[in-house]
Length: 277
Image 1 (spheres, rainbow, N blue to C red):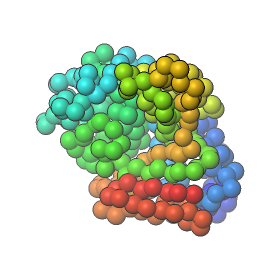
Image 2 (tube, rainbow, N blue to C red; image 1 turned 120 degrees about the vertical axis):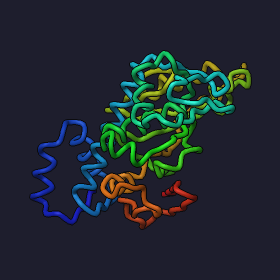
Image 3 (tube, helix red, strand yellow; image 1 turned 180 degrees about the vertical axis):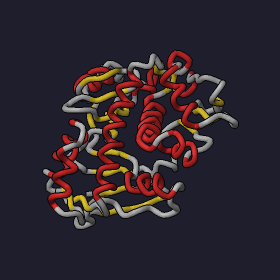
Image 4 (cartoon, one colour; image 1 turned 60 degrees about the vertical axis):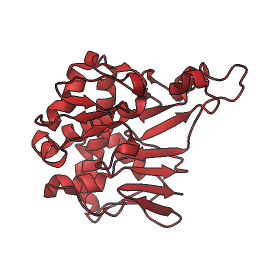
């Protein structure tokens, strides 16, 4: 359930005017057996808005004509990005961060990248549309797009043994018996949309079974071990981004998570947080 300091009347009034997807996410989280504590109604509304924006950014990336390629064959628009030796994209000096991110959606045919890079692009695009160009350009400078293992600005959180996911969460479908000749199909990063739909760059939009079937086509010959969805979910630290949007700078500490700590083990390395339930 969602726990807030505001009166139930204030919360109810705010929920009534939410866009459909944001209200749907609120109802899902409020109906959870887990308790989600927020410092204010504004912090909750920020998360709902950003989660909705993640869904929209994923759908729009699917429509952008950006292609799927492995890191070794990735490409980008050199007017905004410098391709690194490892296949990532480093923002070019002198360009606005908001314009560089939007260019991926506008000139998609100039880009090709792996699904892990796609997830980071989706998250940044969603943050941009949530906080606006001015705040985004102030908070994020000289981005490096590759995978969440290389990103420290979004303060990413991964919950293991979560059992429940919400629109805007990122999950992973693992292919344990991948054919080494097609190692890029060792798994697929997917973004949770509405209902049972997910977006996965290079595969499209569909249910989890669609991604499993696709990955199973790239297993070792004779393998009977199917790809499967991991019981974990990753998302940006919404409270950190909410505070950053208000203060104009990313926090040097990690704000308290909107989830009760009882029965959970939390570990932090740098700006990454892992929660084991």
